[in-house]
Length: 80
Picture 1 (tube, helix red, strand yellow):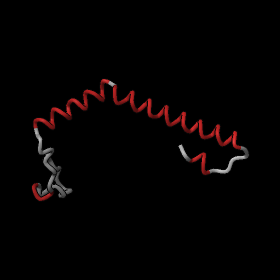
Picture 2 (picture 1 turned 120 degrees about the horizontal axis):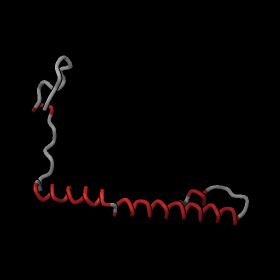
Picture 3 (picture 1 turned 60 degrees about the horizontal axis):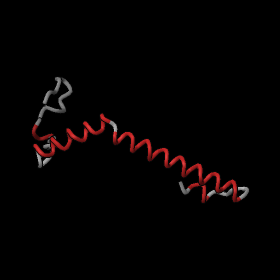
Picture 4 (picture 1 turned 180 degrees about the vertical axis):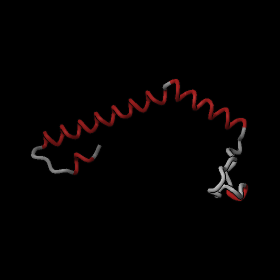
C-alpha cells in the first residue's frame, strides 16, 4: 500500500491516484479475506479445530523418527 509513495511520479495527482488504487486493492483483499473467514467451509474447519482442541488439550503428538525405525527403508513400503 505504501509502495506508490516511495516511487517517483510525474505529478502529485498521479501519485495520489496510484496511492488510492493501492488502498482500494488492499481494501478488496481485506474484504475477500473476511468473506473467506466467514464462509461455511472455514467456520466448519474452525469448529472442528476447536472441538479437537477440547478433546486433546495437549495437542497433536509429534511424529518421532525413533518410534518407526524402518521409516527410511526404501526397499519396503512404510506404514505407520
